[in-house]
Image (cartoon, rainbow, N blue to C red; front, side, top):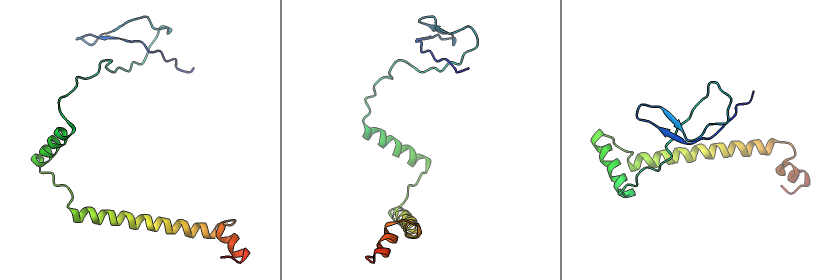
Length: 111
C-alpha cells in the first residue's frame, strides 16, 4: 500500500504534545510525523563579514591552521595533473573506439 501524505499545520506545546489545526484526512492508525518550525528565525544584525570574522577567530582559538599558499598551489597542481591524466585516458579511449571521428578521418585520408 502506497503511503498517503497529508500536510497539516499545528503547534508544539512545551511538554512535546502536538496540537493540529485540523483533523487530518487519514485512517486511524500509526503515523510518521516530521516537524519543522513554521516561523522564520529572527533576523541577525551580523553581516557576512562579522560571521566570517567570528569563524576565523574561533578557528584560531582552536589552533586551526589553514593551508599555506604553497600547500594550496601544490594541491591545485595535483588536481590539474589528475584531470590531465583523465583527459588523456579519455582521448586514448575515444581514438580506439570504432566509429569515432578519428577513425573516420583516417579512413578518408584526412587524419
